[in-house]
Image (cartoon, rainbow, N blue to C red; front, side):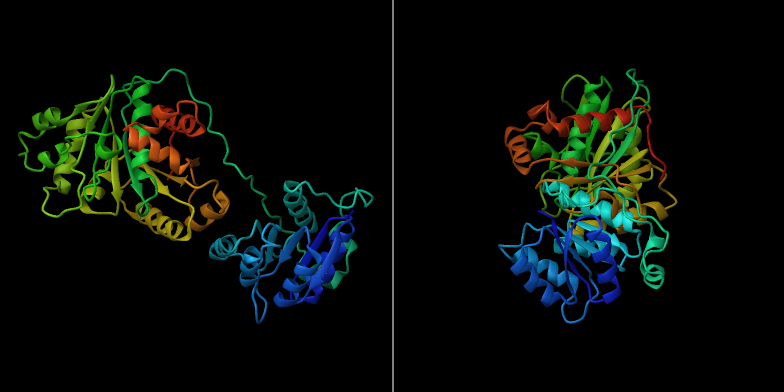
Length: 423
């Protein structure tokens, strides 16, 4: 039985061309020239796939997609947005509405067919087994006027669902190559503290002298994550003089394993606590780093003077974001600010932190929107984070064999071999 594809578009030429293209591949094609009619046909015919335009009168494609996802009988039907709206913001809106893929017009017939086959294959559906198996006819086999309007010769890149594996690393890591690593979130709740803790722990696991510093002076959550009862070393430093700063730092560093030291902050949002200023952050880096120890700092969020002082010295900047529109917009703004600040020269590495399953926004869409490559996606179940916090353990200690543990280890090794991308 042929796979059934519903095409919803208010342009008759597009409907005719897409219908012809897909029928030549053995698909059963239904068409609708408006969103409301498309919903009626979808409800009646139960298609295997819906190709959906966005720019339609009365009811646009985004609203159609939202109604499809809200319909119990249709919510599992895959949807490909097929539209001339190609801005990153448009793609984000399409995926947020519930689309499974997004294809910009104009495109080649081969690319359209490839996308359709890929989406249907996820559901175990093929075209008509008795239909043609050959590749689609080249563009010149279609009517010339329509082809000129809809099928020019530009190609679209089809991106994989998963990020590329990390590049190979050397087995011998030079412990003398100390790094200054800033971990900053685009907003709250994006896993900044989780990232900082587990990067520092896995760097220390490589027999590399490392210090984990809690510079999130608004909250100071590292102590809570690790179950440490008496934090406050960072706040003590704020009262030290320039001449006593080095000795005070060494006194406040907490031994945490063979190669890791902690410098914690008071876990409180109350005002009136002593905080470090930008000059003291510079002294802190000089004292803790000392040319021989890597420093990993949780900066929390925001570009305060203290954070900018650390970012200006950082060799690597790990930007944490989550896959929602608010965080992605904030990431765009933060990455742009970091790139434009001439005081900052460290390698900027955005990381997509997902805590509720795989992101609904493909990495290429996010990269296009924030105008910067995403280093990787770390998929961590929220219950794993909760369990680790309740036990006072780093995630990599809670589950040494997890995929996220492997990714933290690879990230740390890449940092230690100076495998930093360009800004």
